[in-house]
Image 1 (cartoon, rainbow, N blue to C red):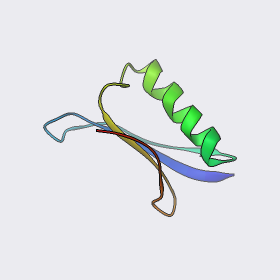
Image 2: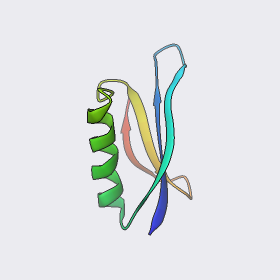
Image 3: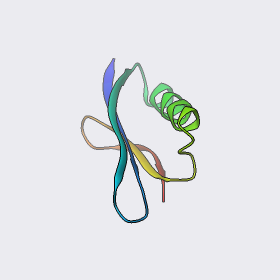
Image 4: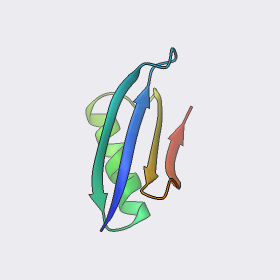
Length: 61
């Protein structure tokens, strides 16, 4: 299991969400990140999901 970080921002730079979670693979992390975004209605906000090394697995501007 790897650690991943999901962050969501407003256009003015305000951080709306900053949380970590664990996933078995990058694909699972991407799927979980999308699920969390949908639950909080943040899919159209600027967001990113990165692994512990900083590699991006999900991004939208």
